[in-house]
Length: 273
Image 1: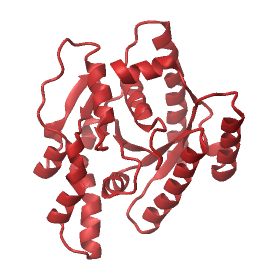
Image 2: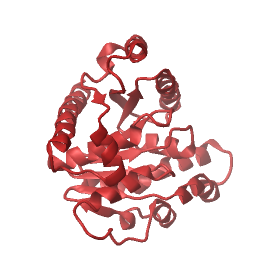
Image 3: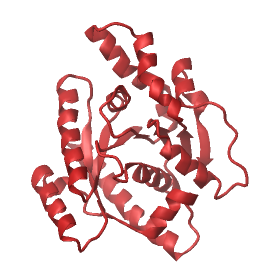
Image 4: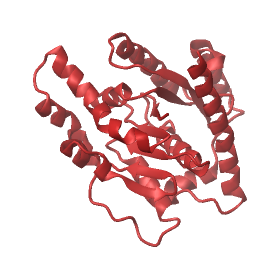
């Protein structure tokens, strides 16, 4: 059974992309077949994983097709790049900001049917890929847009990444409200698997207050018990790619092993309901 997960928050700079990449890497390391779809025109996940590829190779992978090429051709499989064992990527470039214009041209008009066709087209494109993967992870921009709507229409679960700042909490709260509107309108059918806190300074009163507010708003049970702690090595991964060579690398991977374990338990609980 393939599970499609979108990583989200309507506030940028929360660690959304970093966590999407580290989730993909960790799941692949555990033997799951993983596809990460970079649906953000900033293409940070693409850059991150290409740097990770270079940790094991002297030259970058050879490819010349990106997300928008596959969307226009109606075939995303032709854009897939293998990063490492069990981990593939559909790469992106800033030209993906033209995606809404492409949809308007392909499905013109203001009718409800045209709107639904634009939203669900992406789901049609990834449907043939599902048989090849255990997990499809999607990184989306931190904005309300056709790009995000289309990802959510193809999603089974959303994972909200919450940096312990009020602006990030506000972004998460707005996202949940917007998500409910999509569900009520029949444009999405999904569950929130949880809210993953990214702690900048554990001893900060402001951050502790943000966590308390998050628990009051979303319910303590909806926040991951395991938190992402700011580590210099995670910042280094973003700059040079993910490695697994020394004790500092191992510390990060041990943390994400625990987070992934909780993630899998949360999915199992949702699927038992």
